[in-house]
Length: 78
Image (cartoon, rainbow, N blue to C red):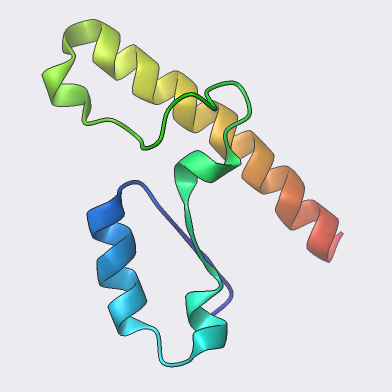
């Protein structure tokens, strides 16, 4: 396994159950951990409970986290 970024704790738990080694477990991360602008959030919230602003928040959070994740990948392989 190269790595995995999960959006919530349930998904993170489920993916970790599938990991075959402790080395694989160490490659499983929460997507929120890559966010720098939304560090006060502890998870990617479910947008369905936040109305239109909930969807905007999730989009902004994931755009930030994805950008930082991409930078990390480039740093490791670039």
